[in-house]
View: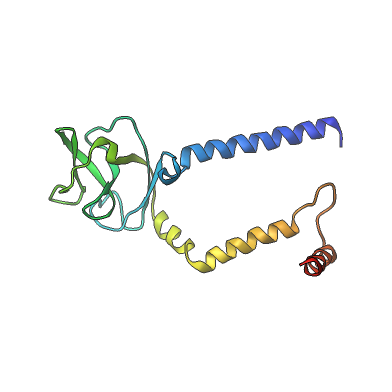
Amino acid sequence: MTIYKRFALHIFSGFWAVLLFALWLVFAPTQVGGQAAYVIIIGESMEPGFQIGDLVIAHQQPVYQVGEAVVYHNPEMERYVFHRIIAQELGRFILQGDNNPWIDTYQPLPEDVLGRLWIRIPQGGTYLQKLRHPIFLWLLVGLLAGSLFLGRSKGSKSMNKQSIQTWFLDMIKKG
């Protein structure tokens, strides 16, 4: 392999590594130290702007303002809630669903808010729930395993049917 091809391969690999790292920083969930909170809309409290099954991605902010739609954990309901800030009193937020005539009974502190609306994916939550079905998870595992078996080995051509069979038989003999 020429020096140019090796250099281009390293640049290409570095580009993808940086891109994947940047995507992780932007989309990492708060549960693992990231800044994004993911919520699937399950009620009608934010209609008509947000429908049941929508996926909402909220991002942490240093400051939240009246009028912003935010995600917070409601300990009374033991779930995450996506509602709009309508006021702030005594250091706590007053929230209300856009479709609700009442305000939320729990009033979170600013540090209780997980994030402000960043991205809305219509019906994204519905599709995400379907992908969480065990059959899709097994399919994903199978595809990943298949890509390992059929991938390129270092310095050689792609594995053919005969080399896969040989590798598998060798694994059985060893194990």
